[in-house]
Length: 84
Image (cartoon, rainbow, N blue to C red):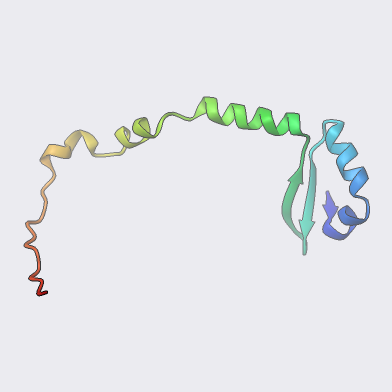
């Protein structure tokens, strides 16, 4: 783990370590801030995320209570008067 100041001063070492296969964590003010990783590792993470998520439609259909949609009571609302 690198402090932000050390990572700035030794950025080449941070990049070399990331390219060697070890993601490099950088902190700011003692708190985790970012991770530097190789492009190949980043692309693998993106590909895994895309494979594991369903479509937006599947997400909406999985919403709790959607099987009771027809039974849901809705309030009757009258439109408000509008003057032009």
